Amino acid sequence: MFYIDAVSSVLRLNLEELFHDWRTSVSSCPNTNRPTVAVIGLGYIGLPTAAVLASSGASVIGVDINAETVSTVNQGRVPFVEPDMATTVAGVVSQGYLRATTETPHADYYIVAVPTPFKDGHKPDLSFIETAGKQIAPLLEGNELIILESTSPPGATEFLAETIIKVRPDLTLRPGTAQTIYFAHCPERVLPGRVMIELRTNDRIVGTLNGNAGERARDLYELFCEGEFLMTDARTAEMAKLTENAYRDINIAFANELSVISDGLDINVWELIKLANHHPRVNILQPGPGVGGHCIAVDPWFIVATAPEESSLIRTAREVNDSKPGYVIGKILPQARRIQDVQIAALGLAFKPNIDDLRESPARQIVGKLAEELPEATILAVEPNIDVLPPELEKRSNVALTSLEEAVSAADIVLLLVDHHEFSRLDRSSLDQKIVHDTRGVWN
Ligand code: SAJ
Image 1 (cartoon, rainbow, N blue to C red):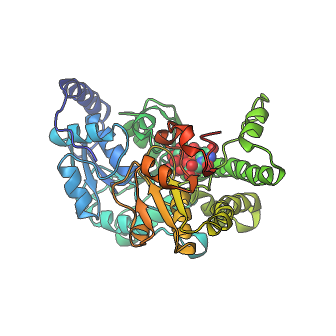
Image 2 (cartoon, protein in one colour):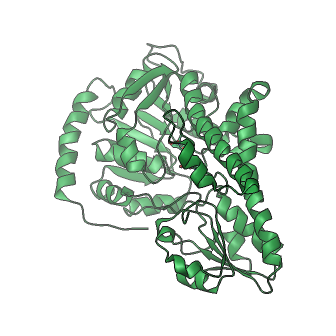
């Protein structure tokens, strides 16, 4: 975590210029001269979005149920690592453009960026969207625009609208009345690790549910987004986001399947993919220990849940990727059991390189399972981006968070799970005499 209390005069100047543009661009908006934006959910998408909007001159109120997150943001600090976010948050909070609260306020615009996990049977859980809707509903006066950003199954924007209208039957979705509430879906498409750049540069899909909601959403996002705006209806926008992540999941599943096939044939899969990718119309992604994070490992299930009979390819890809951690564990266990008091260096716990995000991480899952299956072993976990092990590993007496040098030097088996840049710089001679499993092809 970083705390930068200095705000550059350059940022101040930009804010003033942009604030002028903002006022001009929203001059048609009702209520007040200076419309407010409430961002519901200060997580991996909500907080950077709130910060970027605020740095573009908007008056932003971030809302989160977690009082610690709210207090951290109000101190101008950030609750998780994302490159360049800390400076922006520090700047906009100190200038009063962003503040956080646990109480949903009235605003002219609402951006809902709450989690959409899945529950039993990989069914989407829309309860956070429902709660956000119920909290917003009593505050509405008419003509507000509510944008759903959370990745959602088709129909979720409609569900949010219905939730609100159920609480407030005096309001309507019919465009053009004083009681109309407008809804749009603008799925986020930013890559963790590049969020602050991609928020500004990615093209943006905008799906309208009613009236001119899409156009109004575009006007708001245009404050900071230089990408192209792609206008459609809410349902297509919801499905487009899921399609992008399912496409990537299927491509990674192909790479993971190739890696298992290659293993049995004694073929180096990294070389194989490199060769195939020289073909002008082939672009295979990279195999790994599995697919993690809260997006690609989750979103394709929303398509499967929506159309179970028609989505066999999407389901199979998910199953292939979900089976990869088990395959890695199956390779390590017999080797580890042959060595007395075996020490295993597990390099990386995050779900992808150079971030501290451990959500749905295959590396974390593999380390947990090894610790459980090998009670006599010592697992030396190396994760340069965290200070404390996640709770389920912390409580195990045979897992220790260790420095890279210490872990590699003590280990009988070195298992590389995440391609953090620290690991690619490792002196390869330190791996001599060790059993090495490089699941990411870093030392290939
Ligand atoms: N992975 C591989 N091999 C690869 C690429 C990725 O095994 O060749 C693994 C990663 O290690 C990680 C997982 O896949 O465990 C997902 O990582 P990622 O970098 O592919 O994607 P995310 O989950 O960080 O972000 C994705 C992005 N979607 C697409 O690229 C289509 C991002 O643009 C979305 O905004 C994000 O999901 C989201 O929020 O939905």
